[in-house]
Length: 97
Image 1: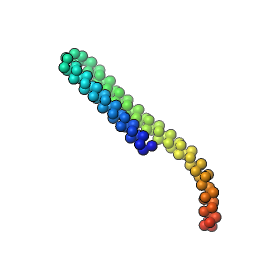
Image 2: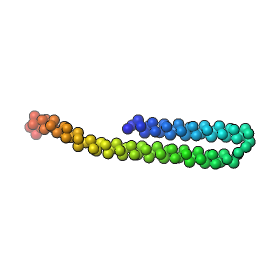
Image 3: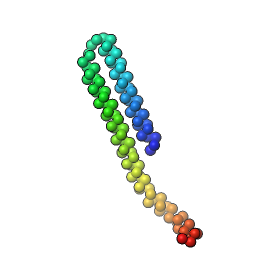
Image 4: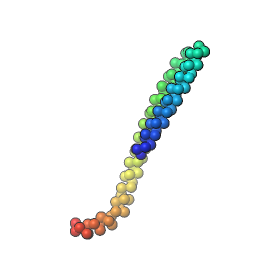
């Protein structure tokens, strides 16, 4: 569980870097050719929206994974306790408690 959120955050950073690189290439092309300056505003808005969407999605995925992990741990606890019951009984009989 500890690695997956980190991997998702790295993925989001990489995607956002790709978006910024894409934007820089397009901006350079527009500046060089002098065409489509108004479309840069639209592109910038889209990049901002996508960046926030990826960040929100990453946070949601980390939260969902955490909840599912906690649910799985809750389901394992009774099973583990049941498997250890005979050991607990043996130790109690040995120590006289």
